Image (cartoon, rainbow, N blue to C red; front, side):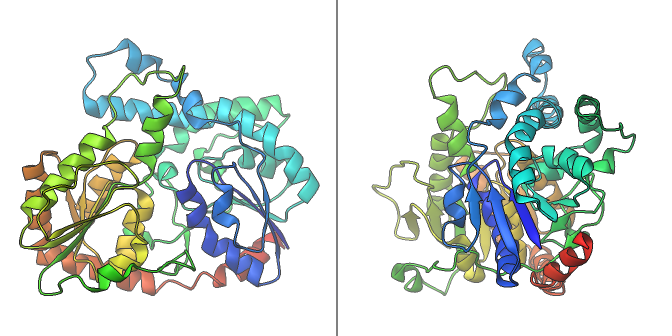
Length: 405
């Protein structure tokens, strides 16, 4: 069987696909990954073919074309701005971005002749290629696609269907005719509009070479351990916004430097805990910090979460999923996009709380509240048990073989 993966967005999308990539390759199937140059290194240590054929496709540039409504209405509330951004993202994925991806990926598909396509959740061109060539296609886990409404994508997709001689579809869920792949059980799903997935159990650590630094083993164990991580997406977005001729967004995005400063100050207030803060490479002031606060640029988060009492997170889907896998309660400080929906879902599931007061005092207060919440701890243990009851990722191979015929 030949399996094609498409991966766009950020390296975290590639890391979410790695367990499935490895399972298929280990079973002797031929695997090709079509991705961008920044994401390609995620797959460099695995026995798969990587085609960097979609380097010039920038999701943000397509989204900007659909933000006119927000730009014309500066008095919109933050909630209205976020809903407008989700619609703009849905429309852009099914419009210019899908058209560009189709041009980049169709030659790869015709050359490789895959039996199945495992697509990035943001890649809708593979929906069209599946219809054109009769190839089954399924989206793989990615946070952005969890909160987007397929009904907002349908008009743009139908335009592309007409352009390519395909019949229009009336059902928004025509983008997932064979279902979708997830690593979260249905009861704890973060997908707002999608059907029940084909869910599999992912290993705790994706990076085979990951190891915790020795100083972590020397941390005190007589007090709660809190891990705070800013994530990688926000710094990437801010860096792109600072590029020459980059368009200005018509709404405010959190400044990662200010956010990190608030997190570090909140950590200083949590003197009854040990707090490890990962900066994702963002510079921050560390002089004068109390001894219970430990600053590091990067840590293998999935490993550390196995011994953490609380994750203070931006609310990215991968981080939340990793916390569920290790029964780690969450304090969510969302920045943009699907992170606000994820924070609400965390509260709905009872596995943590959203931080709405972004001052150091407000962040520290939520952290203390979650640490003291026995219900949140019990719910995260329930989530971990549900995830452990999923079939292992290797079982996806037989399912995909059957799907591909």
